[in-house]
Image (tube, rainbow, N blue to C red; front, top):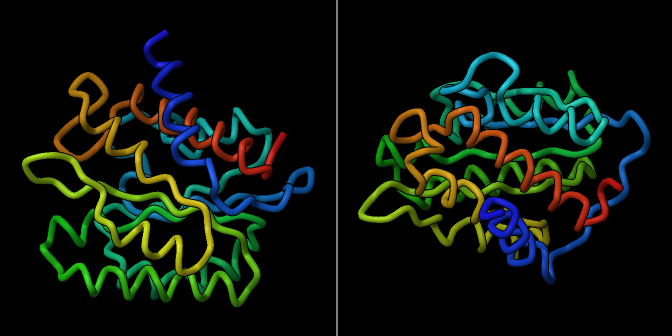
Length: 199
């Protein structure tokens, strides 16, 4: 019950007033692009959030997560990945390794901005997923909100912060466990329905 209430509250907070997404055609491919949080470090094979999301939505979700990847490396990789996968929707989740390596936030923002601009130029819809920055608390940097507003794309900047703030949902300091990835998939699936991408 607590998980259900948390999920509903998160979706209400993140989906309210955000740009809608176009409805995905039957069988349309979703690309989950990111780092170890997308790859699924901390859980067994098949327990990563893209796999769990695919099972819920009935759409193929390609796991294009590379552990340790920074936003600069993701920016370099994105064009080829788009050419190879031809997605109808991208879930963009990068920035955590920049924060761990103490890269300037302005650099992280520039790289994410360039990725969002590339997706817009190719007319590929995107859901931006904010990554919390470790510190005294788990706060998602305002740069994600700024980018979402600038590019008029929907944002989820609460799910990972909520999951990584609960010890029972983590495999280590910065990665969810299988239960945490399941909750992330649940929240993203609900948000995608709220935004009109899926039924």
